[in-house]
Image (tube, rainbow, N blue to C red; front, top):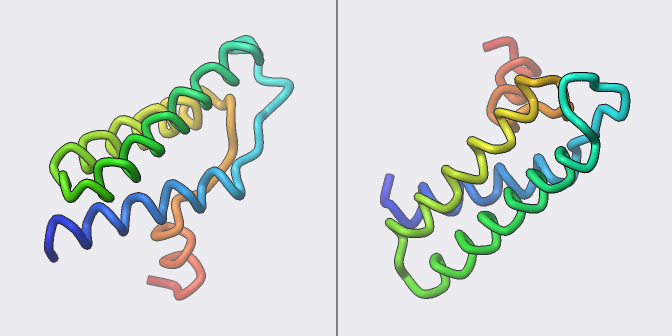
Length: 96
């Protein structure tokens, strides 16, 4: 898979997460305002990834989307948000 296609795959995956993700308002491990700040940072990294993809700087785009995914995963592991990555949801649905 080319770097360009890999970047597009990860951007599409992150866009999906932002559409389906819910914030766990009752999470006690982190304040809701802090969750929102981290979500906004993750969105900013997604925007950076889109921008650099458009500039054909795929290595920078991939780095940006990796930061976005890391922040989202950290929030999910803390129980502050709920979502499932599309690839995992797809595997669960197909039984693979």
